Each structure stands twice: as structure tokens, then as C-alpha cells.
Length: 427
Ligand code: PMP
Image (cartoon, rainbow, N blue to C red):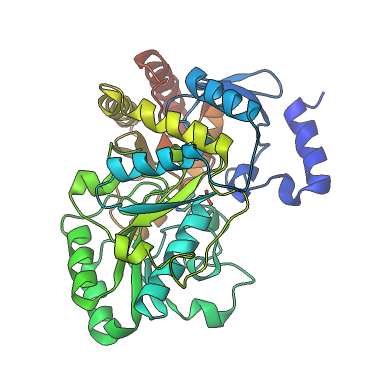
């Protein structure tokens, strides 16, 4: 008899392209049937067949406090009872903006939107409006949402599908996007020397999480800061994934770099649709209604989403929150690497704060090219064996993984113990 997951997947494909509302959910790169999730709590999700999984996807980042955290759910309930949306300003939005500005010293002013894509798309438009220049620099394998000018050599879902870019993006748009190699500062310097006066912004995932997990080489982010300042370009840190995930001040806090603009999402919504972009006051004042750069949203600053976001952010400020998260991710990465070594499998793992990368390769990659040579076939076998045993990793070799505050040593150790058996079968 077909499982409910299979039945639902068949049904979904009749009316939803590929049966999913975001491509990586379809399991295309690993094969098999996606699990349809019925509910989640803490570190676990349950699928339509009632099977439980320890979850290392965490809704792709937002579930940092654990799924269905009671304080977040209660805040959502209370806000919903007062009305779902007004299209007029609310006090909650101020509280959220004040929290973000207080937590991130680089952010003087912030605008709330409903997704990470909107945040990056708006930040790019703002940078162009502010500088009066058209070109932008991005790095291969970094994903910044699906706005046209950013869908050029982007990561994760697009890597999984083997499309360097996307259909439907006019060459006339893409030509304004200069794509360079992540961690190669020389290329950045060369391009600015040649075309510095045309470049509005450099946008970067300061720790890249959409080509698995790649940390910046020493000096890379510092160099971007220096070059942008020298040529009057706007430095945009896309911290949609890393913001409040790798530490209390994102990557900018960890590395001590001040970007001009920051984009946020995921954690700041606590599971509800919230994104944000913010930064230097003189740049942010160019946004409508103060300035000439237009940006808007019917549901922007939704009172229900903002209520969830405020609680999510406040939970991350708890005593020892990031120490716990960091220790869990390290325990997992270290445990998996040791288990693979014992089994003689070429594998490495890395983590930063509550985010980790798993690589079927001898050493942790530092470039897009190195990530691409990892063994995808072995990853798929690992993924499915873990999934069957109740451990849910991201269904792609190019995605970072996430732990939450609800992942205790018991959960991590259970996953490592199963992985030890799985690695032994992968040889
Ligand atoms: N930027 C980064 C770094 C991301 O990881 C993502 C989503 N994974 C986005 C932007 C786009 O965010 P959203 O999916 O909310 O549109």
C-alpha cells in the first residue's frame, strides 16, 4: 500500500508544479518521495505517515528556538485575536525595528518586508538609487533570493537543478550583475580597478550557506569593506540565513566588519514570513516615502508575523543561547566527522554558531569549485539512510544544516550513532 506521503505527493503534482511551493522540497537531487509534514515540536517533525524525525532543516533556518516554541505560538495567538492585518502602522513594528537596530550596530534604520527575496531585491534597488550606478557584484554559489538580477550563478536549489541561472531572466538584466569567485579578493580588486565607477554594490553571504557552508578566508570580508569604501560602492551583507543564527550580531559581529546594508529573514520571523533590510541612515533615507527609491508591501510588518519575530529575537538573547547552539552544532559536526573517519569514508564537516556543513570530501572546502567536487551520489545514499532511520537532513548536498535550542545532546548523539552505522555501509 502506498504511504500517505506518496499519495499526497501524487495528488500535489496535479495542481502544484512539481508538487511543491519551493523547488528543493521536491527531493529532485536525492530522489524519492518528499515527506509531507503534519506537525513539528522542539527538535522534531512528524510526517503524514506519523513517523517522527529529528529535524536538521528547521524550516531552513527560522526554527532557531525549536519548532512551535510555546512563547512564539502564544504571541501569534494573541496577535491574531486582535486582527490579522491592518495596512496601517502598529506599535509592534516599532518594537521590532528598535530590537534589530539595538542588536545590530551597523543598522540605524530598518524596513520590514515579508521574505528574504524582498529584502535583497529592495536592498539592491536602494544601493542603485543611492549611488546612481547600475552594476552589482555577487559571488558564484551565493543565493540572494530569486529577484532577476540576483539569479545569476546563484546557489542551492539552482545548483541542485544544474541550472547556472534561470529561464525568464533577460540578458539585459543579467548583464548588470558581475559574478566573481567567493573568497577571491584579487578578482574583486581587479574588477573595481577596471569598472569601479559603475558598481553600485557588492552583495555577499558573509558566511555562504547556499553552496553548503563556506566560511570567508581571513581578510576576504575586510577586503570587500576596504574596496567598497574606496570606490563608493554599497557593501551589502546578506544575513538572511546567518543573521541571529551564527551569533548575536550575525557574521558582522563575529568578524567585526560593518556593512552599509544588511538583509535579514528567517530567524527574525520565528517561522512567520518576515524579512528586513537596514543599515546606514543616509542610505535608508533614500527609501520612499522619504526618498525616491520605491518599495512597499500590503502585508509588510504584519502584526502577527512581527509578534512572532519579536519573541524569536528575544529568545535568542537568553543567557547562553548561542553558546548552547554552537556547542550542539560542533558536537554534531565533530561526531559525524569522527564516525566517517572510523568507517574510512571521505567526509568532513564544519559549523559556525547554529549552522553546519557536511561534505563528502576529504577536507572542508573554501571555494565554490571545491564544493562542486564533493561526492553527490554518496550524499544521496547517506541522506536516504538517515531519513529512513528518522533523521531529517536537507535534501541536497549544497545546503547548510541547522540546529535549534531544542536539540540537546540526546538528539545529537542519537543522530551520530545512526550515522556511524550508515557510514559503515557507504564504503
Ligand atoms: N538570502 C539568503 C542568504 C538566503 O539563504 C535566502 C533563502 N534561503 C534568501 C536570501 C531568500 O529568502 P526567502 O526564501 O525568504 O525569499
